Length: 267
Image (cartoon, rainbow, N blue to C red; front, side):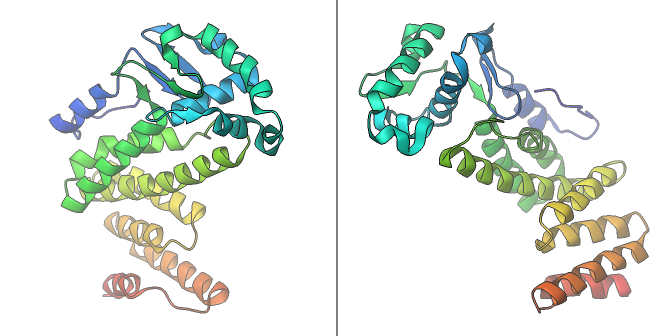
């Protein structure tokens, strides 16, 4: 995970956090699949599409054992109801061969065992967004800077591209929400830090408006950022866009907090 880091902005605690994301065991499930365990790249050893999908499911649920019937349903959906073991057995055998024997444990229930320092990108995104949101609530913009970008860096990529199934769709939906929250934290921390970081705040504000046009937080963050840059008229245009959208599509006015921001900008 490579990020461009401005050490003039990032505080010591954030530097430590970013350092903690480095490990000899790195699993990337968003974007191009990457499986590096204890420094060895095992990605090409995973057995075919179903083997990779099985690995992704076990990795995403690695804190608990998964029954074989659940695994078969995750890979084949309703088709697995008739003969789950017949479908699953060869995939499990090939995956065991690709990994060390002690990495895939159990028979009736399977669990993926990774080294204690393993970093899985989806887990890192969830941990990072909680850290970022906590820092934003405290108004600690420097502490929010790194975690917010870690969460955004991960969720800007599609979870397991080419994969299908209810669990894949559900995971993508959860990560889409994390992506929006990460944009909010990036915008809030950039606005709080000011200076050159106003550019990142503006980009995330515009991204929020595009990705979630009925989410008022994006409009407010974009309005505040434009006003901080001295572009109050453009900020008022953003409010008017929101007002017309809500009036036309929902028949309501923006929330009181958004209207109050509009009044402040007018003043």
